[in-house]
Image 1 (cartoon, rainbow, N blue to C red):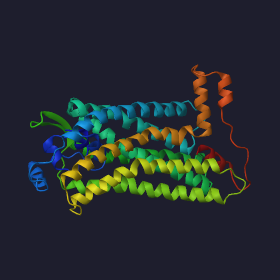
Image 2: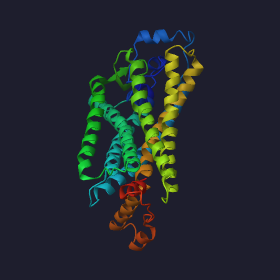
Image 3: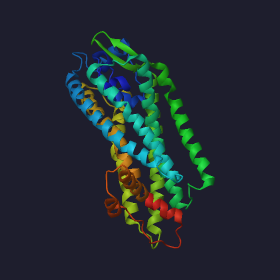
Image 4: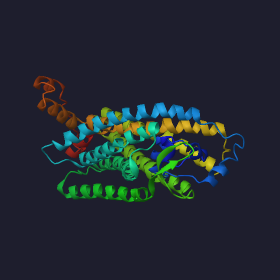
Length: 381
């Protein structure tokens, strides 16, 4: 099987009988579930292409080469970037403000998420060889951190919204307990979402293809429900929340006087654009897949082949967002950049002269209508 089939339920009922696995199924399992299809499902799907069954060997060969290389690259980039974020924040000598607490949790979620990718890359090449227990653990970790990564992005957006639009400093002592409780609540909620995965994930052997795969054994009736739940909870609601928060931030910055806005607006647009570009293609593919399941679109071997390729590419793009998060939410900030340079100086990577030359100074322009919290929030953008 290809990694996609193993990890997510797919539109394609052929894939299990053909033994295809693809990492995008894992990605979709964070939502749809890693389903194994019964023989009756396969027979039903044969109605679209009665003779002969669709040929998926071309896409299988493509995924067997593309997925391991690309996901190992994402693993290395995401691991290095997010570990640097965690290290810099842990070495801070002062209490972390609200946004930094959420960025810290976001980095942890991204590290744990990309840490699962080598397992699925290995499965694309050699089938699942890590045993039943690791199947449950790795699959559950993936789902927990897939949701956590999205939810902490929403928290960062809401924190900046309060700090700029309502000038509420989230790092006051009175707010610190709220931030910690919010972070804990997100982790608990994500763990609860992964409980079904831990229960129903197991390793199964496909005698027809002589391969083993880590997959979920849910009834096929859960397929559409889980997919819609994923698209609503993990995409549309976070997207609407981020759009609402950042649109109000932009309006507030544009209506302010005597306040440097150009950089803040530029960074906001980059953050929103990155989220759109990384996630919308994947969910558009899932929408087409859902329309095929509801018979709104007529299934065909051509559709199946194109959707297979689209799933592989758009799933990879979604994972790549984990590599962008450190750049978008940490390294663009003045304080974080200066802390990062100080860390490099302490470990002997750069000289003190280099540190002085490249350290960023916050703008001293400040309008009387803007509090320090707004200035600090702007600098953090």
